[in-house]
Length: 225
Ligand SMILES: Nc1ncnc2c1ncn2[C@@H]1O[C@H](COP(=O)(O)OP(=O)(O)OP(=O)(O)O)[C@@H](O)[C@H]1O
Ligand SMILES: [Mg+2]
Image (tube, rainbow, N blue to C red; front, side):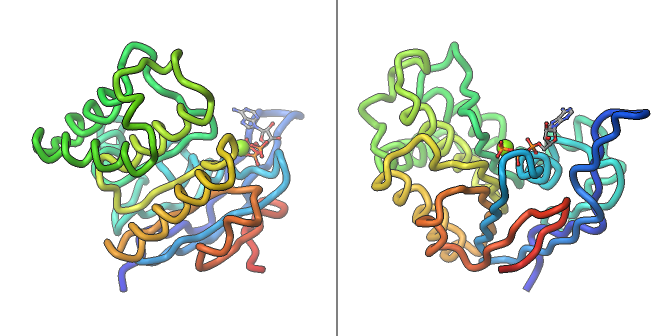
């Protein structure tokens, strides 16, 4: 079994001088193939910081991170972008859609960047948009969508490049229970059937039933339980 994510002694501090704030403190984590991990923690405990470091969006102050066997250390900006495109799906806490692209175009754009075959990309995007119940909105711009619809587009988009590992920052926060459940089930199914891995930050205890492990972020460390 090969680990999809390994974090070794990862630390992150913000600020400098008298105002140094230590958010992650020598954090260790291993997420294996086929595992869906949930991370809980109070607001401000560092969940988004942890997820951004794991997802190669933020360079930690110290420590080492491996994605699908590849170390992030010593990679330049271009190499990190390429690695994210090939291996990582990221669902942000806010949807972060491109304002000038319609819903379906958002997905096809990612597919193009990840160099997926155009016909396959079109099929895959239709499948995902239907599953998330936003197919009818495919020709809308983000500003024409509700908050929950935007969130579902962001979720759909994170699936497009067939990531080895998916990071989701409160993906169900702006969704009703039924739709939230569909999103989490979709993540769980993909992880199990395709041998992927996922890490999800959530406040919603009802979503934990689909996760294999529940971790709490406390004092800059992840603890089981
Ligand atoms: N770029 C930054 N510069 C300085 N401090 C930051 C920065 N980003 C986050 N912080 C601080 O680090 C701490 C952790 O922030 P983070 O966003 O990781 O928390 P969180 O657990 O995701 O919170 P929430 O549940 O509210 O989303 C907070 O105190 C925050 O103010
Ligand atoms: Mg956060």
